[in-house]
Image (cartoon, rainbow, N blue to C red; front, top):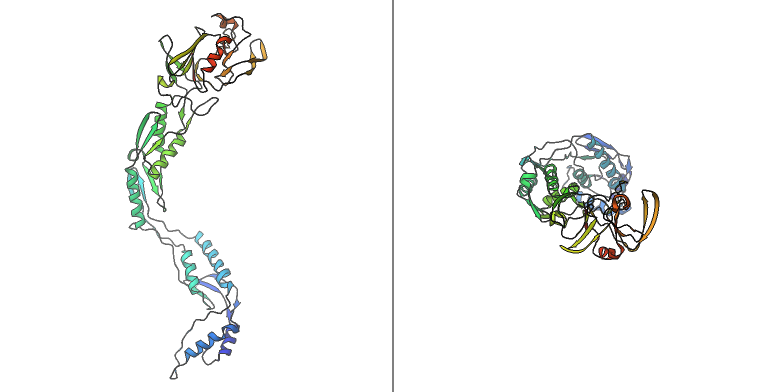
Length: 420
């Protein structure tokens, strides 16, 4: 603008065309549209000030460059063109090699550090910052190339990762299942682990899951045989049916994995499942009498009698009639549980010689999903000890009406029912 007046300089600036091409390291990455500057009369005072600063005491041919931004903001360069630059950089990065960070990880109980590798992807965040500082009002915009840099092996990040993994290898989680506690040591059960950039640990659960499955096999009771001491003192084995519990190995493994990753020292078993009316493991809190506990109902098919115990005390015993034997409607043997209680109730179903029936009872306590349970049978005339052979029930335990209320009152939901 040497030799021009302020008005002449403003006129030149108003007519100046900006090509808006963006170059990185000499390579054009954005071909922007041509625009005019936003200089107006409002910028005249600033131009006069710059021209005044050009004046020297002595004549001089030395050139000086000055920076002047118009008062009216140019949204094309600050917003549109910047957006095009960011989009182009993201597109270019898709075909460029990303840098690979060095990372500490646990491998077969040993902490190792992977090597870092350089890449050729652009550091978009830094280039956009550079653009904000230097886009100015030159016709073209030239930026220095800035590439993404990997995390190096000797960085503080890797040192922190190693420290985190060292802490993990020293951890022990005490896992309590019923009345037993298992000390689960990371040094034995965690062979592989990594640490993320936000310092969260992620472990491989293969060995941990195998250990939980082993605990489940040794301690769970679902579908296993129970050792049971009868009223007469004889010890028998009874197959577990609906009664029993097992650990959900997948969910419990995840809980213990989380305990290791978060540094939690102890965990109680929580995800326990069962079968039948309730899918929560029935009997988990019974640790006495081989898992049956001291409150249960005992049913002897041979003796046609039941005994109901509460906290180890015999509350009631009575003769009963079980399922009819000659038509294979025997009351099913095994260890079941009281699903629920209902008084009064209407029983509906089928039996030999009567495909559809509906009968009202005063008390009903079922223990199988197929509809077997304890109930009074006011219609029954034959209560003989051998009645079940040819004149038994459809599978239920028919209980004399005069004693059924006592039986009912001493039964609770989820109580074991041992039938042999």
